[in-house]
Length: 419
Ligand SMILES: [Mn+2]
Image 1 (cartoon, rainbow, N blue to C red):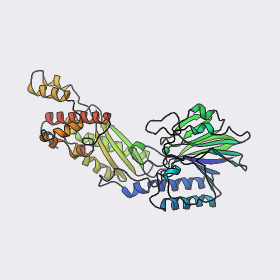
Image 2 (cartoon, rainbow, N blue to C red):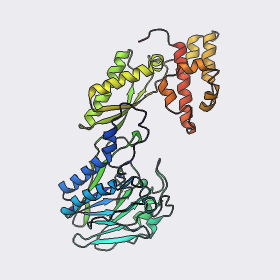
Image 3 (spheres, rainbow, N blue to C red):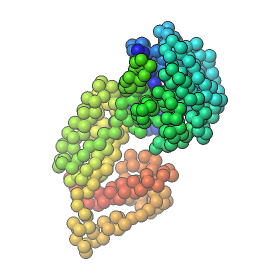
Image 4 (cartoon, rainbow, N blue to C red):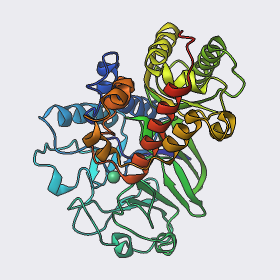
């Protein structure tokens, strides 16, 4: 009986993007997060006395800024060396040979797979054959899996590969291959990397994306870690996820349908945040709050979104170790407006005109001198989202257009009652 650990997409020292605009972001914590999560991986390997660790690509986020990234890695790997734990490494698109200009000799418990052709390493003491190949270039378009050797008889066969398989949303189509390509090799376990969301693609044979070990932004939300595999009598006996992340991202959706007052809205948001905190088992959190539902307070929410956002930040700060990255106002109006206002009133006509508005956000900006009054009514965070002035993809522009319409309507219809 022995165990091994499978991790991927460590993205060590990954830079922080888009956090400059946040005065209250826990920058130091975020910057250190990939290293602290990797420390957890090393601790887990030693605690579990695993036989070896597999790292299936994108260990580095890109070329090292200086040698510190490499020195850090060597230091931690040498901890494993003292424990007789071996490490198998295959580079991915981010740390492809062509992307990394600096290099350091690695300790002798590490095997870094060739980027020219598949290689096989035999662990005779365990009866294990590990097959792998790394990327020589970033945009690897070939199906390299096809060239992997067939399973060796009388060994437990493991394949290391950084791949998007036949395609995974949000991931570049690198080293594409089909499930059948992998199954045809007759291996016991395919240790994949590249897709940052954990996925057990198959259990017979085992084909696993462990996901990355630390979320770096809201699109990498939820628990993150590595996969621990138990081998008994030459067969895979158990495969389980272990959390390693030191800071967790959550998309927190709060339905405000039943909140008739602002106090109830604040209560609902606080409760939702507390629930996420309980799930995170003491880890600091970075939360994006999304307010949804058909809300009787729809108009007020849009009108006061800037002040409310600060109110929510205050709630988060009060809970401790919880950072509110962004608040998305996405509630719906409770009634059809035009009907509510009557057919013939000037107000109804104006509402219908806004509803029919079909502008490109960039065109809106060109119109701004003429609609300066309207612009001054848009909350600052909307203008700062970059959506109005950047060339966002169309779907995002559509969302923004709807948001602006809602805001105009809210301004138009929100009667007095300032908070
Ligand atoms: Mn990758």
